[in-house]
Image (cartoon, rainbow, N blue to C red; front, top):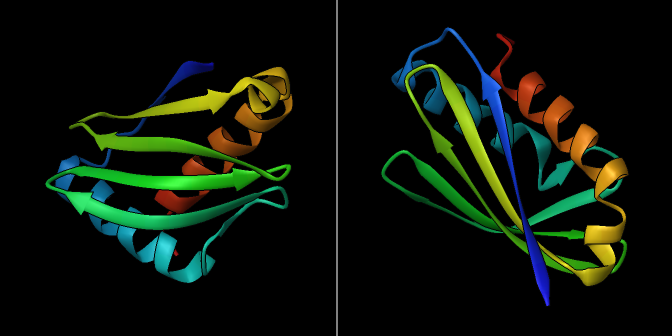
Length: 103
């Protein structure tokens, strides 16, 4: 059994620039998003990044849809991660915001 959680993170970059920054940012992270989350199996389908993430020994499916003015992040969390979502989601929000910043 899993819970799906959706995060919306606003931006003012436009879709093309947001996609570019996410791609560059993920390349720099080397598969790690914050201290507790590792990303695996990243694939882009148009303006949507689909990936699996691992945290606390559990795996979750996730996607980031890049919109003109926001990121729509959906994460399907297994039971154990759903219980830890209050700690994981702020990390995911922070790291996604950092990936959009100009480096």
